Length: 346
Image (cartoon, rainbow, N blue to C red):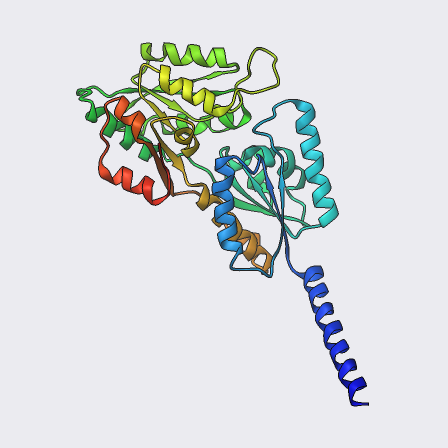
């Protein structure tokens, strides 16, 4: 009799525990994280570091990840398929909140659900203005904007210019990029900042569609600039109409070897790919703040109490061999910052 009672008690405990686990899975808050790009892209890894560090503290939240993979693809058919895949993921899993990272996800997914009271949206890594996606009038959307650390870029170029005895005149800076949506989305930032540059003269940006076009921009740059700024370069086609893109390391490696003026990357990935130095927005902050906002929404905080913010943190990356090759000796604080974040490459 006692054995039967013990068995029954154990069975009841096991069934009860299983019921609790099932209930947790069924009723815990659901957050779907949708990236514009692929999981191997260094910027995405930085964003994911911030997301993971926050959510590691809150294991009660159910998370799923979805990657649109639109940094390596630019054709319309792939974009439509990627958008449909994200919409299907939302329909199947029915998340409470979606976190949309970078501009393409806003264009293809966020605009579809803005104003939908059944689903809350948190964005991050957005270069455009919120109104570009109708977010300024959508009551279910908040997030963190990605803004280039232009003050830090200005200061760095000033340091580099003085480092080589550039003289009293302000150096000219030319920004170049590919024909991607991302590059175009962020150009307004530089226009808005043009009267705030303290140490440089801003040259109108230029863009290229093919690698050959890019090479021409790089080789002609000394005629109009003293520094070359590089942001988006992962969507340069092999040739006119080609669907495949030139590998990022090949582009930046060629650029660093052949540019007659110093190259400053506007991403840490640029230094990883071969550039002498990068000054960039902190992807970690973008991920952390997006996670913080999404979690607050699942806990009942209304969107109205989570205002949109702009990122403030920046990162420095260094490739010492490339700096030495161009005759630069940066203040130690730059190297110390890069080392602290594991962003010194060689």
